[in-house]
Image (cartoon, rainbow, N blue to C red; front, side, top):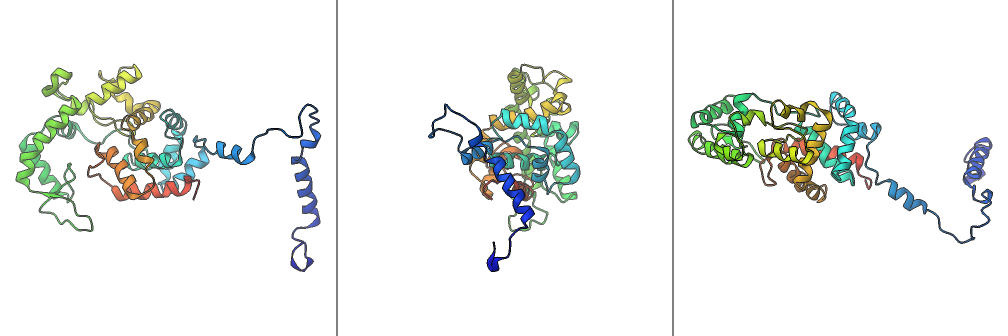
Length: 315
């Protein structure tokens, strides 16, 4: 009864609720003669706590988590839900909501919400990004960046362009870019075993294009493809097999989990929901370096916050 002796619920609803309670209170009807009055059973709170650790995302959970993503992106994620769940479990990402939130946010931004299974570009772009570039080509890239009013592939900004705050980009002149870029690419190619300059490691002409980024976290370079090939005991390095990392759902998901685990990103994700944590995770994904200048940092942060607000059990 409420204040003023007015019923809180109707007599009919109260009777229905009483029957419900009686149906749940089944212990006296069990007739367990061999069970002592004092005995062990599952503590309900602990039972619920353990079940909360299940990281397998249902359709409803995934769609709710991606509420800020565009509708086509949510549909693509739903189509990949089963292989993605298998990957999240295999690489121990789904053991905490914070890890899942970081992963979904980074993959979402990196792939245009699962639209792109491989890096966008053509043979010239991939060669000059991952294999070899001449000073002349570096100058052409600088001019293109100015014409399109965008940053250079290094993340730096042509000095001729406006560079507003609050976080302006580091700048560089055309002359310095032409002088420094070829060596930067040579160092990058050596780290990837790409191109004839790295023939002793198997490098060949065309490796920049052959081993451009594929999978939802875009494994890139001959060395990374070779490592994944050895891990899976399948051929991913002889043409046309590199494409399998993009065309096969399981491979596209699994290669991403492989990269995440190899780079120990779970440790970074476990550092929490701070801006620093999400920036570091994003830098490893986008630049391969926790201190790298990553692209779309604000978008990555916003995506993470939206997903975390749904999956965070303690929110």
